[in-house]
Image (spheres, one colour):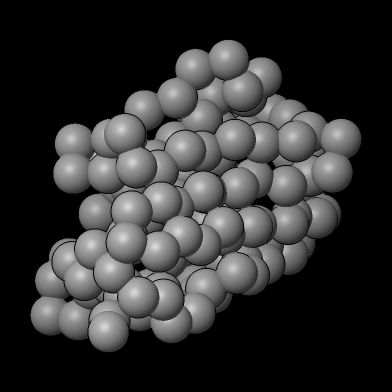
Length: 117
């Protein structure tokens, strides 16, 4: 099983980044996909999630209207488009695959997002 995030980096406040997460080794379309983040000294928090078909999604209140989660089941990939980034968005962002039917989940290694001038 592989869960690989990419797209992180350093961006100025107000800028944008697009994170990608490509998975292999399991049936992507059977897993709800989530993005979490963890800032230094803070607990990991759920940022966004998207259902199996991509027809429904949810967001942390502080990112609503700025972040958009999407998925491509043909490419086994989930995305997180992040706009209007703020310094408080600085964190390591993790991709998480969750199958509630079989209670199985997989995590990526994370990608660093730093928002600073």
